[in-house]
Image 1 (cartoon, helix red, strand yellow):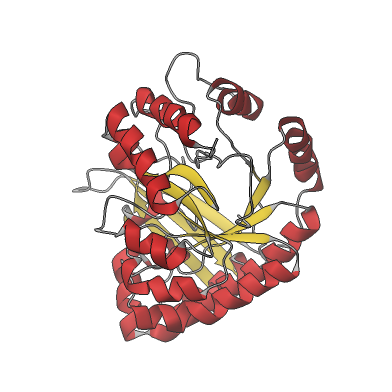
Image 2: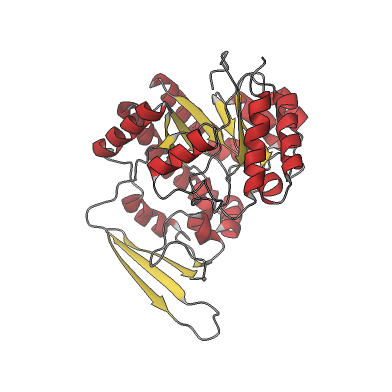
Length: 367
């Protein structure tokens, strides 16, 4: 991530959202087994994730119930969070593949497409959100100690995701509503950005105190898929620069996750002093990887290179191998981390994963 000389360019997929693969010989049932499969069996690199949960006001209480509604294919799941400022409520359609059981998280990609009633609709809802989206008080000393033991054993880094910015707005407002609010009531989005920014700054300080190796700022939905370049400058640029500055002053490397919709904001991304940009989609969205390499590659680490859905999910071993070759041809091996982005699903062809690892081993060093 510092773009220094290394013994080889690493391959480090982002696996954490998905369960063990179904392939024989590569299954795991716990974290220790997963490290063994990835490092010893597959022969790639990996890292550990250290979470720092948000705090909430002690008077906050919540109620959840399920309701069968005539005309609705799926039951509706309702959640009410009682705060000193009033009620914060959401309703989703509980589809058969709903992964959160009898709960509706404040932030989850699975929420966005199932929303019936979003969390945030007006200023009153933001008043309530202030009580449940508070900067964390501290971190779990036991958890970081356990992670340090694993990190030392396997010689791998520890990462902490410290913030989500406007990515959170899709879960809280709903995707369409968030875009409309940005035009019709931008002050609501400004206030949400401030709430999230305060929590992010606090998380960075706590992550540094915990001794993690690097932090990630999630900007997956902070691109022109949802916002105009001028909106990105208005809602994000100043806050992002403060977050980067805070991380660097604390001695931390900081990565930024983006996916599609980046071509109109290459100057914006170039101007930000992130050490690493992760997750850039090389196939979908008509993104020009040669131009991305020219504009962003010279002074930022690039973590990605493969399209997880197109190469791993729908490709063949040979298309995967060609994608690995193309990544190194475009970006080189200094300051690059090979990975399918955004993540690998357990049901996808495992031979494509092993082809990625095999081709990477052939090309990872200059010798």
